[in-house]
Image (tube, rainbow, N blue to C red; front, top):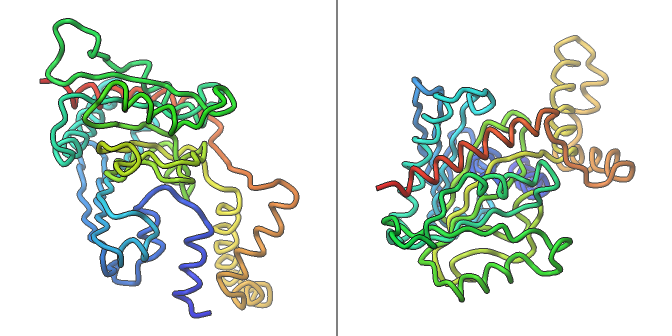
Length: 315
């Protein structure tokens, strides 16, 4: 298997919900690929990096394994810090990109915000916690310029129903012009846990998110535009060991331990990843790893997100 083909195999096997990571894995040395447009911008005063990944056509979809649409990723180490003013500035910046997505969705006057996940499982509780601080206006007599409703549908183990079925019924009954879904995501790299927010115009696809929702929440399935907003809270254990194996090989080679390094370097990317899976999954299963301070991180990030959403709907 050619190296590019091996990288494509790894990209498919090591799951990530982040378009920026999928793009990084698939890009060649130039960082470019057909059907995908990438633009990066830094906000130094906020310590924030914004990356726009636009999947333009089928070539782009095949290259990075993500549906056609716009993906905006915000990364800032300050997301991990309890700083009221800094958090508010991040929320304000996030609100601008939420507004952009809403404009692309036709500037809806009524929006249903969905908090996906299980509030009893901390890494999967981002969505429900974000809705705790959301300003709901649909029921008010003097409504805001945009009517906001919200729902936390729970998970199948709690309701006996598919999340997508619940949301579909609510959309049919209440008639929002757009849906904004908040969910916890899975990343490829530990460095992006707790300091990354992704917005996408493509909704939620099967297999996405920590809870691995089995049915899609997209414009095609719901009949209205669906914007997805998420934060990676877990990384697959196999992905961590795979990265560690690469690092180990480099260290051994730098230390002059050529024989051990050669053993690893002589393996294809596919062979390395399969070895890691065979070592880990029979003993631990398809385990995901989350930071030790995940409670604090989810609390901070859910507030940044809820404030960003609230600001986006302010007049």
